Amino acid sequence: MILSHMLKVLRLRWLIIAGLAFAGLALAGPYALLAPDVYQSDASVVVETRSSETIGARTQGESLSPDYLLTLEDILKSNRVAERVVDLLDEESLPVLASRFGWVPGSTPVKPFLAKVLQPRMTVQSSLPSSRLMRIGYASNDPQFSALMANAFAQAFIDVNLALQTEPARAAVKSYNNQLTQKADELEAAQRRLASLKSQLGVIDSEGGSSADNVGLTTLATQLASAAANAEVASSQAASGALPALQSDPVITQLNVQLSALRSQLAQLNTIAGPNNAQVRQLRDQIGSVESQKSQQIAEARRSKAAEAAQARQAQQGIANQVAAQMQRTMASQAAESELAQARLDVAGVQEAYDQMAQRRTQLEVLSQSAQTNISLLTPATPNFNPVGPRRLFIIVLGVLGGLIAGIAVAILLELLHLKIRMAEELDGWLGIPDLGSVRSSDGQNILQPRRFAGLLPSLGNT
Image: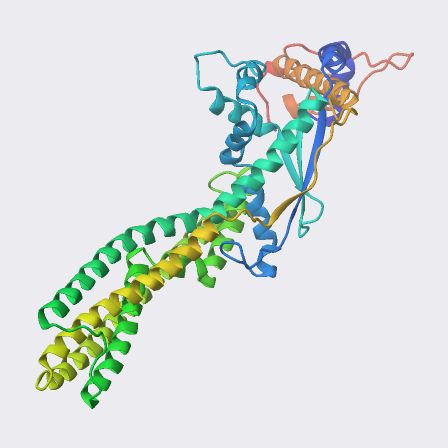
């Protein structure tokens, strides 16, 4: 169908096009006029650089990088923040609020239902890609409710971010508590052995002899105590999966940032491209590569901690062998003192390891109870009584345009179902008959009448 033929068809079937355009106006107009007003309130939060007192300190460049800010946006849009918003609301008002969104008592739990329906109405945006200011908005038909929910999402975001910072420290404290219980039992047993040995030998003082052997033994005992403490700390870190090393490893941190950026790009690309898109496949390959590098780096860190623990145990064993040799030389003249020295050595080693582990546990416990976070509420949301939607004129224009497009499509479809020769130029293209001329009436009208069956005849080609 040539363009001139199509234009002629549209002129002949203008009633259909006009009718469907009017139908689109009739549908969009009442909806645009009767749709309730939508109000939106915004709360502003500012992302500061992490101070040295918080868990997992970052450099200023990492804290303000676009990847880090995108990660914060993903956290804000997560279900965990929405569930925290529900927890911040009044418990008694939850059923009433849920019923406004279609919740039926007894159908589903009210808190997961509210978290699911409240989260899509929240919006977040930054003024600039590298800006530390984030605006958290909420849209509803009630300006008071919009302000309430915007402030609730801002506070929930701060609470969840704080929890993500302190949870690793809480896990480490739990691990240290279990190890300290075992170490306390070992210390108590070592002290009982020392007291029993003193009682058997009739020794009152706790000091060693003043001979050269005793001085050397004391020096080695101190070294062994330090080596034992180092070995205990290294073994505890290796047993816990090298958690402190993984948290402070800059390579793993950078890989996490790269993964967040790539996943964000993939999520954005998936909205406009299919799974077989070349860029989508390339991003998936890059994500797999980065995840592989991260796994290798984690394995390398754990192997490094295991090697450090083995070296510490080897060093401890070497010093212990030296202590044993020194003790044998001392036992030749002071058998009783050597037994006491060994007992003191056991107590000192276990005590040193216990003290170091207790000190580290105390530091982590303080960090796990920290109330500091790098996100602060800058401006709380207030009710905004100026509606932001719906865009009534846009809806009406869209309805009219939709009706026009539908009318044009119907007109063309009807013409395709009932083809007619409407112009002389179509004789050659459809029937293979050259146009030798036409006879026009005196008033300028073409007397060549359209043949309704012409479109059904086979083409005669050039024969």
